[in-house]
Image 1 (cartoon, rainbow, N blue to C red):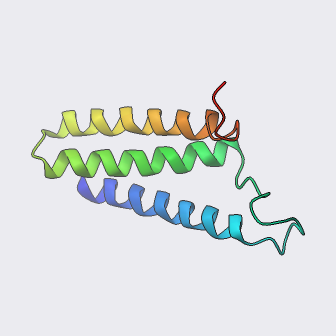
Image 2 (cartoon, one colour):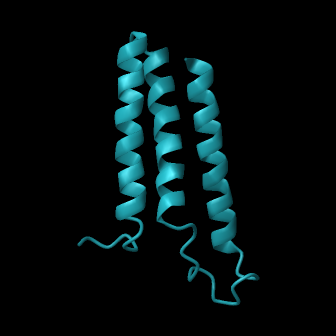
Image 3 (spheres, rainbow, N blue to C red):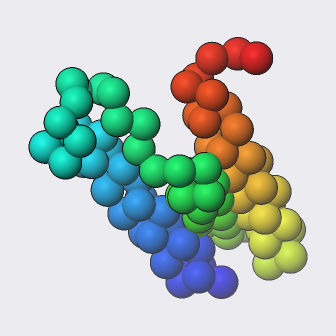
Length: 96
C-alpha cells in the first residue's frame, strides 16, 4: 500500500504547489497579489484529501501499523483534511 500512499501524497503536493504558484501570479487576473483565492471548493477538498491520505497512510505504514489500521487512518485523515480545505479555507480562514 505504500506506493498508493506515495502517489496520493505526490499528487496532493503537486496540486498544492500549483495552488501556491497561481496564488502569487497575478498576470492572469490583473489584481493585486493576495487577491486570488486559488482553486474552488472541490479542488481544495481534493488537494487536502489527497495530501491527507498520503501523509497519514505513509506515516502509519512506516510506524508499523497493520494494513487495515493504516488504511483506516489514511481515510480518516483524507476526510478531515478534505473537509477542512473545502469549508474553512473557503470562508477565507475566518471563524464562523
